Structures are given as structure tokens and as C-alpha cells.
Length: 393
Image (cartoon, rainbow, N blue to C red):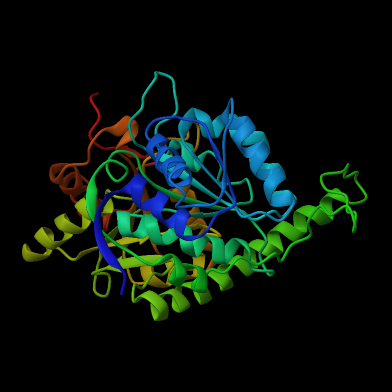
């Protein structure tokens, strides 16, 4: 048993990084993630963590340095969000294609313009195709645990891909919750440092990041595809081991009252708590509604999602990021449709857009979504565009 400590999400992540005995941390401040790296700098300054803490001049440099650190075999970490993540974009693809493991925490924040420091998922969704394993938490405990799980997955020789862990800005990062903090010894026994990838070594020279002409580039990309398939299997193994070690159980998806549901809402992140609370209220009124939260976003758990929704008549997918010009309106909705249709299921979907730029999701907003699902449950035609929830017309 660990020690239960009241922690904001950012501090919870910092404690997990310390317990993983990270060798190199690269830092550049951007709200709302700054206090993660501030706390880590205190751990180093106080002698609680023996690591190199590098305060660099930009997020682009932060990930560049992390690539160099991982390339020589160090356990690397960084954190960012929003415009900072956008500045890292070039390096995200490089690190993944070079098959270098690390953990990067995104504290979800809206992308500008207009300038907005509040929470939605536009930054997280902007890097969905960069070849990183991606997880999104819904509590501070989960944000803590994701870091530990992330290093086990990233450094597994079957995977060797970097991992993104994430939480909702301010809703989690700056709100204090009870978090069970494990001892450093127990964490390292679960996620021991393992140099399982090729590293830069003067005595055994290798080339990294060299030119990939048409004779080779395609094969590199195919290898990433295969590694991501392996990551799904490794995720399932790691969360089982995590439950045995620490008693907390996770899975790629979390279902809520779906067994007899006629309609359901699918989403990610902290707003799912509000949705589950409304499901409880609706059930008392005789409305057969359920919910599904996606935790593991890449690789997308298509089989799990399709199986969980197979008996639902109509599914509403809530995206907290808008894709202008997309017929679905959001990335998560597109993934859910693909999961359902590829498996030949007769399950229909409609899209909801909610919570952009930090707009809160209220119980009345969830009622609006459930009412739309009931309205269209048996309708011949569905809306051809997403339904915007909680926005002024």
C-alpha cells in the first residue's frame, strides 16, 4: 500500500516521474503544465532525484534534447500543452520513427487563436497521427499511474515507441484530489530501467535519423504500424501487472451501464464524470442510457469499443476538439464510426461538440445530448452535421 496524499494533477505527475527515476528532464514553462516541471526542479535541487534538469529555450528544443537523451540510453521526460505541443510537432514524428522511448505529459489546453489557456482536447488530438502511444486520464490518481504504466510500455522491446500521458488542464492539473503515492522502490520494481533499444555508443557505432530514400522509408513506416499493434497487447499485459502490484485496475475503455442501454455517450477525459452523474439521474427516470470512456486513444481500442456498443441503437460521440470541414466534426467520432463499421455492426452514431476553450459541461448540457439521442433513436435520418452543445447561436 502506498501513502495517500492530497495532490493536484500536476504534482501527482511530478511524483510519478520522480519515482520512475528519470535521468533527463527537459522543461519549458507553459500554462497549465508549468508546475509539473517546477516541482521536478525542486526534487532535483533538494537532492530527492538524481537527474539532469534542463531548462531550455523552447518546446522545440525540449523535445530535441529528449531525443538526444533517449538516443544515448537515458530515461527521458518532458511536459507541455497547446502552442508548446504545436512547436514540438516536427520532433514528435522524428522521435517515434527513430523508435526512441520516453514519456511526455500533455496537460490539455485549447489551441489559439483567440488566445485561450483553458481546457479542451484540440492539442491532444492535433498529434494523433504522430506515432505515439496516447492515453487520457480522468482523475489525478490515473494521471499519476499513467506515467508509471507509460514507461513500462515505451521501453518494452516489442514496442519502443514514445508515450503521451494526458489530463485536463485546471480541471485536473490544479484541483486537489487524494492520490495514492507508491514508494520509489515499488515503482522501480514495476517499471525498472531497461535499455532495450539501440543507443549511440562510440564503441558500437550506429546511425540514427539518416536519410530514408524511397528504397527504405516505406519499411520504416510499416514497422511503426506493427509496433503500435504490439503496443495494444503490451498495454493489456501491463495494466494487469499494475493491478496485481498496486491494486488499481485499468483497461483501454471504461463502460458505464451499457448492458441494457439503448443509447450511449462516448467521450474522453474528466467530463465523463459529469456524464456518468447524469446517466444515474436518467436511469431513475427510466431512460436506458449508458456511457463509454476511451482511455487508450492510440492504438485505438476498436474491438473493445465495437463490442461494448454492439447492442446500442444510437451512440452519441462527444468530441472536445473541432475539425472544421470534417463530416463527423471530431476525431473521436471518426474513430468510433470506423470501429463500428469495420466490424459490420448495425449501430448508428451522431456527433456532439462540447467544452471547447474551457466551456464547462453542465448537467443540462448532458440532458440536451441524451434528449437528442432519444429523439433520433428510431428516426430514419440522422443529423448530417455534429450537434454543438452549450454554444450561443
